[in-house]
Image (cartoon, rainbow, N blue to C red; front, side, top):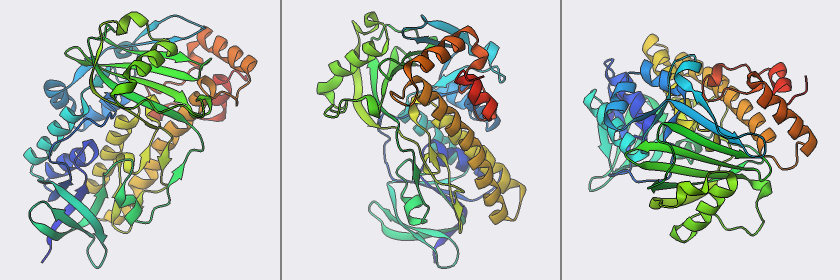
Length: 406
């Protein structure tokens, strides 16, 4: 007979492990299935915005992450190339949650989180590759486990927490939507970078449709990113991936506006990878005993750094609804509705920002210059994606002010 649980999470990263921890410490039987024996550097998001830190506090994860792998950053520094020099924002003073940015090396965070799920009472199986969903009777999954062949596990609810290229999403028959255009992003772990360690440093270059973002991870390590709009790339341009392209990555960072002196003694300490950053999502991520959370439900363009914060919002909403009701179909439907709302706000805000700052053709040069000049003169015209996130207004009046149409 198949082993039965209350919840099975397919994936043991931030989404699956955080949900498992929350539910297990409230008495539920939870199984976490993670295919990787050891987590590897896949050039993933490593920064939580202020509103994501607030979610981490609510879920009881903030102190755990800060004490084990986290690096707290109080300031956000940015420049708009051709318009302004670097300016510094105190996130603790100016965000409604009085929180900075919480950064960490992604594989370290994953190890901490899956360990915390196990410590809370969840059953964790590593090297467990889910090969299909099982839908005859109680929802379940068929799993191939290293050295143990295949077996079936069943639960009241299966949660797909298996990332941007989710197999659960495909098996569940969800229709995946995708933005028609967007950014291409490249990331590299670096040491010896002479960038400030107490702040996030962003350089926005609308003239080249490029962004450079430097994320301090503590201990002299940084994750550096370069993002460029797809329509601004040369058609024959090779992706910034692999060791041979590290000099080209550095050159692109400097072209985006990052100071050249930062890179004089810097060296790569991880893989360089580049990928299509367009949003992908499903509407109403619940169907017949299967729920999607995190990137499996909606992957926002990582150029804006919202992915981890959105993931924890998903975890909190779903966990609270499951814990509050015996009607799990209704609870999962309620989660799906709320997910669509909070992701929809972020999708709309980041889409507006991408259009104004980076799209090479949708906004005429004169209109862009006028809008950005007005934005710099009155920062309340901006979109507070970092500090407020899904609670920021996203109505037509907000859009018009941002684009200088009022």
